[in-house]
Each structure stands twice: as structure tokens, then as C-alpha cells.
Image (cartoon, rainbow, N blue to C red; front, side):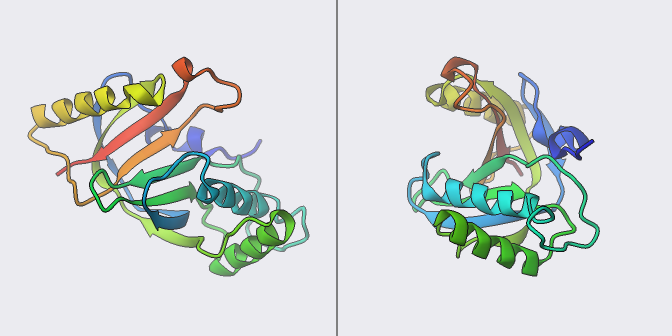
Length: 192
């Protein structure tokens, strides 16, 4: 059976309908960074998905990766600032057995096969630290209400939102198969 990060690290890839506090340790991700408005259909998401697919298919494509094991493709996530100038990172969890050389190989393969602009993608350790999160179900237009609930919950324990760090969204639903009203996203705010 394929290793699934959403199952094996459930505490980091799921949330409750009510807000909760948790500490997120350092993890290694594929990452592409940018600035300005980040739309879900942006080239950054497509490039990230293509590189992640190449890494997932590396063994089948004849690229030898020691210690490789079968795994479910992790979700493509986003980290972003809530204040101008807007900055963002599109990320996807990277299995520990992949090296920087493997990531370079996957970028070249993705560009060759799909034409996706992958040059800005790199492997990166990301430490989120103390956060508050909630499971948001519904359209994007209702996310501000959920963020208010997270902030109020964190404040009840003496925490405030750390605006110097990035907000985090983890989409858990497939937009092509799920109606907007049933779309599930983990919303996470850094707190201090």
C-alpha cells in the first residue's frame, strides 16, 4: 500500500470544524516563491504539480532513487502574506529520500514534457511553529469568517496572529469533482 502523508501525518493535514492550536515542526517541501496576487489556476500551481508528478514517477521513468518507496502525491498547498506587498509560496511535501539532484532532474523532465516553467522550484525546509487552524468547508468567499473564528480562538488562549509569518491553506478537495459549497480547505494562521 502506498504511503500517504495525509494519513500518516493526519494531525498536519486535517483540522476540526472548530479552531485548534498546534505546533507544526520543520518539513521539507518543493517550493516556488513569488509576489502579487496568487490565483489557484496560476502557472505556479501547474509547475509545482508537474514537478511533483515527475518525482512520483521517477522510478517508472528510469531515474534511480535509493530508498524510494511508493507514496500518494501530497497536495499542492499555499503560504501567503495577508499584507502588501503580497508574497507567497506554493509548496508540496517532499519525501525525504529525494535529493536536490532528483529535484533538478524532475524540473528538467517536467519542462521537457509539459513546457511548464519550473526553473524557480526548489527543495526547502519550512518551519511553521505555533499555529491555529480550522477546517473550512464552502466557497472561498466565506474564508474571511473562518479566519476571524481562528483569530478569536487563538486570542482566548493569549495568542495573536503573527503577521510577520505566512498564512497557510491546504486544499483537500478536488475542484473538478467537488461543488464550491462542499470544498474542504485547512486554514492555518501563525500565532505568537
